[in-house]
Image 1 (tube, rainbow, N blue to C red):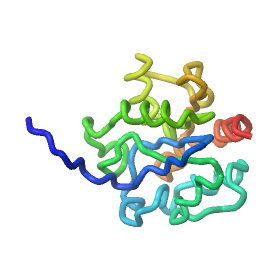
Image 2 (cartoon, rainbow, N blue to C red):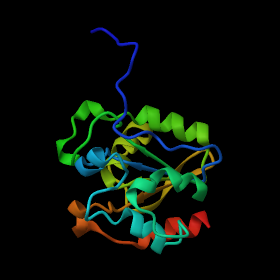
Image 3 (cartoon, rainbow, N blue to C red):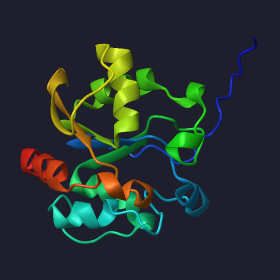
Image 4 (cartoon, helix red, strand yellow):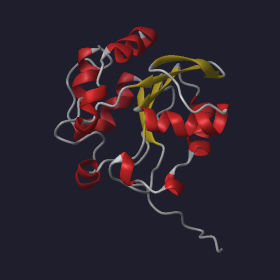
Length: 174
């Protein structure tokens, strides 16, 4: 098995400014997000509306304004950076929980929030040996960083939607 000196380009770039207070980590870019080159761009996705409704952003941002989130102390990444699609379509070897761990340890934000259970399960299985976790604030931390697991805002996950853990995250950040 050979190695390449040039890793593949990510579907969407990380948005991880210095001094970030909150990092959102999704599974992977959805198909619409990959096409539009913008985070959480699917027509039924509630991510941007939820950030505004919970007070995490001062106004409603559109997906193509994702690069403005650092002005709100917010960063973005995904568990799988080099593939896109629905959670069910992602190849098993696409996840990189060690990369996410390094990013969070380097940035030392107040909170890491997993957007949906899938990315959280990959991370928790690798780093804490856990398979299941509830939504909301977790017992486990990464140094000073608190960890939240949030219901996915994707239109595909509407039956799991609950804004309450998002409100708890916002209250913690404020």
